[in-house]
Image (cartoon, rainbow over all chains, first blue to last red; front, top):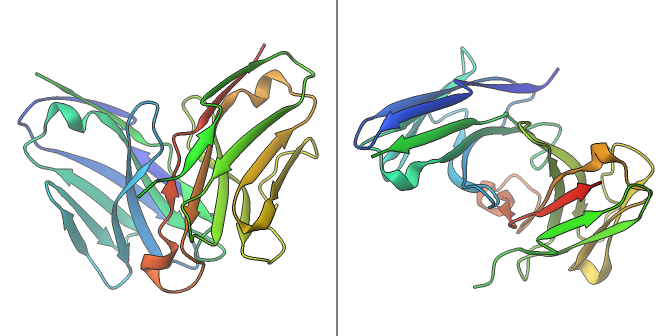
Length: 112
Length: 118
């Protein structure tokens, strides 16, 4: 069964600290792995997209890694800011390039 | 430019009533998607439109759910005889296309419609 699992379910960190969010996926055939940020009351916004040939990709303070052998991905946030408080969702397409399988997300709270 | 817009932003209805949710995709995007996000759950695929092709309806949970896309642009998701378990946020997304070119199939999401069925 195609699925995407994320951990932890929620996380609280202090402003300025780093954190790493985890994603395990079992999607076949694999084409790419995406991380989205979803602010409360908003739609998800894409942070990174990685194909199987890419093992790291950065977008500002966000760095995503991909291990296609273990089918794991991580999202590392550096020097967190209050505005990083959001849900972070790991996503991979299945059955085509547009039928997305979403993880349940990690809810991150950054406290001052 | 304008992003994906959805209306209404909030909808409260009584059990058994029909509701219509609207999505305006980004101009020029040929692909349009509907998702449902229940409280504490991941997004769930509902339906996908690509150009003039027959839509992929494989995610619709029951025959009470239907969607149309008129003129290749605006889409309406209709839920008939709403039930309390239909309460969720309904998200619409659009993308340039549906092919191997990654940048073309990146999906851009609207803000969603929060549906509450009493």
